[in-house]
Amino acid sequence: DVKVTQSSRYLVKRTGEKVFLECVQDMDHENMFWYRQDPGLGLRLIYFSYDVKMKEKGDIPEGYSVSREKKERFSLILESASTNQTSMYLCASSGRRAHEQYFGPGTRLTVT
Amino acid sequence: KQEVTQIPAALSVPEGENLVLNCSFTDSAIYNLQWFRQDPGKGLTSLLLIQSSQREQTSGRLNASLDKSSGRSTLYIAASQPGDSATYLCAAEETSGSRLTFGEGTQLTVNP
Image (cartoon, rainbow over all chains, first blue to last red; front, side, top):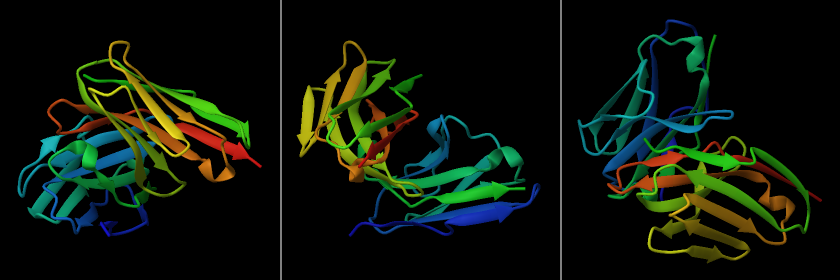
């Protein structure tokens, strides 16, 4: 059974804190993705990675960075959290084609 | 840049009704069109994938159609059930296969 796991389901952080969201997949997938989901806006791509140590900006990379040191793990970093980064964050992984994406359960982040 | 729009944003129907969810996209040069389901607080699950050379795909009570020339896709749900209540998202896959662009989603409620 394929699995994408995210380190936390719920997270509350203070403004200015450095926040790490971790995602792990067990399918040996090349591609991994980070999205944020907000009411009325759907899923918006923050960053994606097609190989270890490789990354590409998505549509809304500002305020975020990523790290992929191992194939199975993709981390999203909020260098200095702000209240407008309060959102649901979804991680996904896929084989060579994006439509083969499998999603994690999401992390609901609240920045106060 | 691809933009994907879904109408309506929310829909409430009585059990047993047939219904149609709409998805439109601005760039017809897509590789695939995909429909997902998302239950509250959960990740996404793929329902149907329509390749660009296809016109429709069916799975049980679900039927999805694709008209690339007009930039439209529809998801038809027959004989709706309360268990169909969820958010439905469509996503267009770029021809490079590197990413999906999602619509805002339609929140469906089927009342017993």
